Length: 241
Image 1 (cartoon, rainbow, N blue to C red):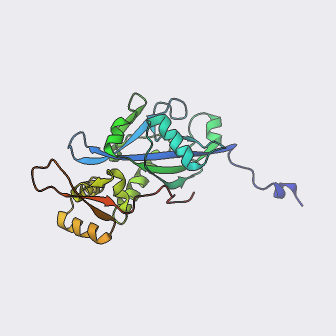
Image 2 (image 1 turned 30 degrees about the horizontal axis):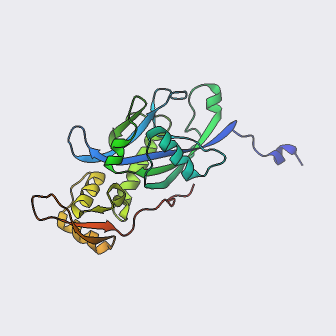
Image 3 (image 1 turned 90 degrees about the vertical axis):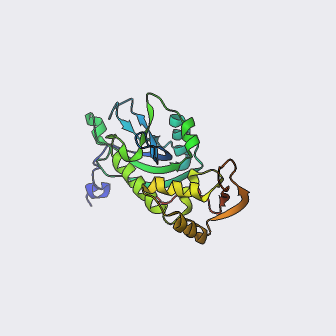
């Protein structure tokens, strides 16, 4: 029998690396309209390929760590964030997704396991922000390194779909919140206004929240009731790589 058959096909690349990247969403006012909208942090690459371009936070998976640990490590190192909601989003492994630069880089291949993190506005305010880390409006990001624009588009579409049938919006809020605050999260993510009465009816019918018995103080009108989530998002993966 031919040894060539036993050896199998010759690999098209010299090296395959597994990387972990994260899309981090926070709701903040739009710089032009002031309307609450989704933002995300990007990091500026300091080496080739794509030196000087913005990219999602991430890095190679170490041999002694699991995926969640890797995601948290790179998040803390690049942005200083430790999000409560961290969930596996999808894996991106197109053969040519990382090919740019010199000949050796063109022979290497990177498969990225992508997580998404949802953080509150006050957490985003405390995050690292400087020359090589900057927050952008999620729907207005510049041309990014690798296929990261496609990853951002996928994450936005997934979030806007999931928020319509799950309690994932609670991750943007404090432990106690009003229904108006919850509606504002939905409107910021979906980029459209929602009818307050219909929204209230749907949320209460979903049994995803319960009243705390407390009321929001400091308002000029009748104080609204505070609620808490009955089903906070977990750290379980949504999509297995």
